[in-house]
Length: 309
Image (cartoon, rainbow, N blue to C red; front, side, top):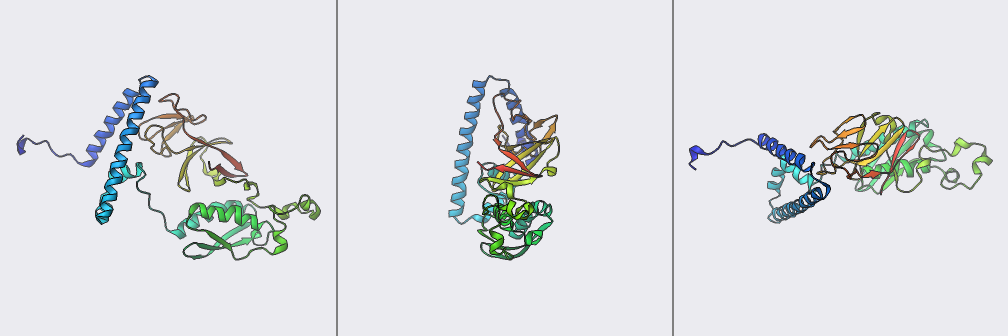
């Protein structure tokens, strides 16, 4: 073929749209096949993706060995390259600055503290691994402040900032106050003091290991979903009145995120290839017998907690 007969070069968006359209077309065909045929296609897809991931891993390793990291960074600036590497979990999204993540963590615990007329302030960040805070209001001298720090403030900061290993309150309660904490009191002490609120903490119901606060009930739209990421775990929360369910934020099709999908009458539609799910059961309507991965969810007052499996 002569140069004059060469087809015109298409730009990236047009090429991408065409490829996505082709994927959607074949998915529609496969969706009409029986279960055994679909399983074969799914396993074939996994094998091809594993091969691609291994090839990309070796390419990135070789570029680093050749000290061509500048070229690698330039390549990642392309949104398609970035999306592909993210899909194969070969790169991580950039983390917000440490101070911003700490403030996000404090913002998460503030509703619980304010429900007890308290608050928390960031005092100092001492690199590489220490944060100092100050409990204010009623939380500053409450005997349950040890529990508030440990189960609430400290745990939430560490969830947002895994590099932080020490969270210190500069107004740690005195010894007799610590003995009045719900984690340390003897049975019946609250009755002897005749002050049940004296040992109350906004985080006292979160003592069970593995439960982590995610958000508040009002942050989840009624009849809709909310995307949450905690400690590299991505979830979607669905609320129907007082009933809240949690699932991994991953479509069973290609693992794409679901939090930007549309929800109508309890049916979630994946924004990428239109796979649909019943949010009350997690069942995939596009491919029966497939389900979203559920996560245990419970409420503590207005706070919503997840059990990390």
